[in-house]
Length: 210
Image (cartoon, rainbow, N blue to C red; front, side, top):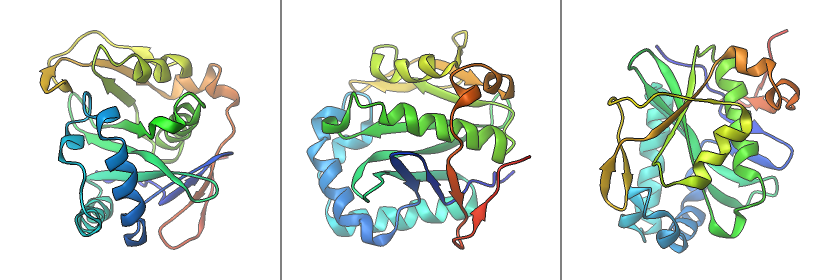
């Protein structure tokens, strides 16, 4: 199954969109300066810094995966175009097909509610545009900043499972998992959360149901 994820999602303060080759320089710089900030919970940060050429190659890979519907990786940009992090959906198939939201943000932009704003938009898109029955978030138990986001948005914490693992300081640990379903959208804060503006890969607007 391929989920119809829009190429661009614009909220009040943010643009979540597919990376373009022109983003390679900014991505190389932001990821490198956040190496120590991210490395405990995101193993890929151990490979930083990467060159602009390496990042350009990575962008080609994740854009191909986006086209194939196997992973939906997006940059997290301020409305003025400044790259401040990364987000998107991991495609999961167990115990049933669903999308899992991942996110990271530049240390200098923490504490501003930007990740919550991005995840709220991605939750609405997954459930209302893509028709996903369940959208998830998973994080290491010690990652309290990541935990605050789904809790704030009304996700339900799940019983521990053995399906997924995540990283904490290089060790594989069982994650804390959260789920949202269409019924979550009837409860605040998502019940009144503004719907973001959506654009497809051709630049055409994507309409919300109803």
